[in-house]
Image (cartoon, rainbow, N blue to C red; front, side, top):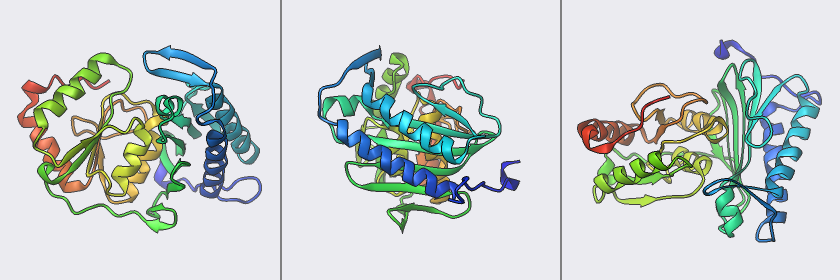
Length: 278
């Protein structure tokens, strides 16, 4: 069981968390080097882009982690998406928010998690534009630049700032927009950040009281699961079930607001066109 697994240190004796933080911050500097410069862009799908900087950042992270943890697996967006999740596995998104990155919008991050048998035990989300690093280790709390993350004590959806993102599945994106239409104006405000990883990090530190997504991959969600849990937040699938790194949907945030949202969603389920869980 993951709860009994001791988090290993690297070959140099450096803790897994410190390795992840160093990798994320080095990768963030490399991403900023390529930001707002001409890009060689590969189009993977509508709005789903790949640049040479994504690949360079991913290579930097892979090499640094492999040096410290040569026996660990690697699951990442650009070059190892089919890797198994058993045992010790690093889950990496070199640039989460590539559409923002390509468009010159300063809202993207490097996302790194160490998982054991699919459960995240170390998480780092680094926002190089704002020099903010969100990090957590199992059982030790969530921190932002060394300060404990704090959720707002929000009890209702009506009092919440709600973040949501759309992903790359058009039907699920339309369903999300329909949900927002049905909900508004029964919420303080809506935000669409363009980075699922930063959306979850914001949910972990109370900037968003609720964050929703219907089309996630492991590299989007792995770090966020631990960040939200260790901050004392609630995180489930959109149907309220247990979440893991293979979950496609997520509802995360302040526990009471999260529960109130699930109640509202259940009351309006017939109107919402919610996607099936995979």
